[in-house]
Amino acid sequence: MSEQSIGTRCVQAGYTPGDGEPRQIPIVQSTTFKYATSEHMGQLFDLEAEGYFYTRLQNPTNDAVAAKIAALEGGSAAMLTSSGQAANFFALFNICEAGSHIVASSAIYGGTYNLIAHTMAKMGVESTFVSPTCTPEELASAFRPNTRAVFGETIANPALDVLDIERFAQAAHDHGVPLIVDNTFPTPVFCRPIEWGADIVTHSTTKYMDGHGVGVGGAIVDSGNFDWMAHAEKFPGLTTPDESYHGIVYAEKFGQAGAFITKATSQLMRDLGSIQSPQNAFYLNMGLESLHVRMPRHFENGLAVASYLSGSDKVTSVRFPHLEGDPYHELAQKYLPEGGSGVVSFELAGGRAAAEKFMAALRLAAIETHVADARTCCLHPASATHRQMNDEELVAAGISPAMVRFSCGLEDSADLIADIEQALAAI
Ligand SMILES: *Cc1c(COP(=O)(O)O)cnc(C)c1O
Image 1 (cartoon, rainbow, N blue to C red):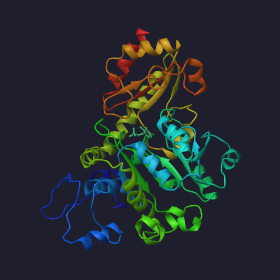
Image 2 (image 1 turned 120 degrees about the vertical axis):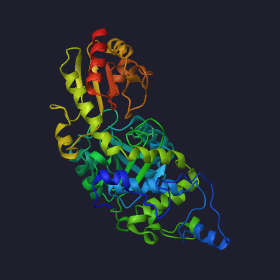
Image 3 (image 1 turned 120 degrees about the horizontal axis):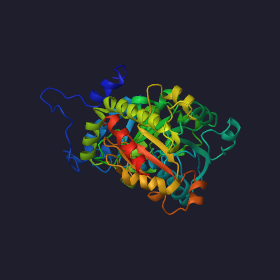
Image 4 (image 1 turned 180 degrees about the horizontal axis):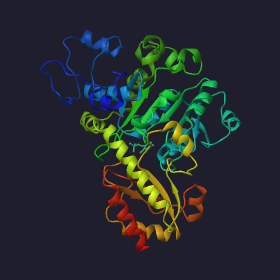
């Protein structure tokens, strides 16, 4: 499969029906699976045989769609989760525990920031946030003896900073820990972080992969490249016996290619139960079938809107990594040579009041917290997601009161620009 182009994999990977079997992935809408003997079922519970027994852990529909995402990212194994939040939590918690420490880029999704900085802190997992543009010395000094993972986003939501994946991977590997990259915005159509040294890739499939605003979901992909046994003392969960499965050692029994996902499935899904519903996995697969056709259009619209906005005297700044002059233009050329995402952020002259007037005047673009939908949507963080903050607090958090996040859909860019033009005129 991996020799096929990314587009062919979007359409075909993960599920190949045999003679007379359904052409489309069957939705296995069943909580449980029947066995002839207790002995056979016992083997499944001991992880001695492969098979399904309860959809809280695994389901055939999910596995087919996860296999497609693994093929797209060039990974060795993958799993679906109920949300992007669950994907990032499971990816981190699979190798972290009370007393561990995470190094994370500060340019990440707000939900992931809260997860790491607050919720995981309550579980005893410490963290250090570094600027994605920090010097090599600053990055190296963020590590501690108890660091277990490095985390970043390929294109940060909503900051749109581009992660220097090779540099962060090198720093992680120098300290004997994996790099986890959230690749939600570019999707594997535009960037495959594993090719640049990332060890684990996560997704909010809710965004472009689904692409139609249908189902919340997430995915975790393992590259199979990280040698857990070489750093056995750091990752006892993978390299020492799991007493809840009669003392199996994941890294030995399932090898480098399978240990991470098998552990996350058989321990974390078993105990925390955040699986994607098979119905949502089916919808997700429908989105994946056209991902390679949709992404270039989202990007093309983003570039057209960003270029238009940068020529307007009512706009004080525009952020879009592929725009000439963007601080991340060079990294975008390197990691995202064919495109990034359809998300543009910009600031309006006239501050908060101008942004509010602009948003209210839009006719085509809808006000939503969502991004990465087929229909253009936009958000004024200062009056929505960050409304509890005053202007001073917003600036301290790196968000201007005049900032608008604009997620270009699949419409014609001329219509999007006409909508923006009339909304700017209304300010
Ligand atoms: C939306 C998002 C998440 C969270 O995903 P949900 O599916 O909403 O739980 C995580 N990372 C990024 C980059 C996102 O955009």
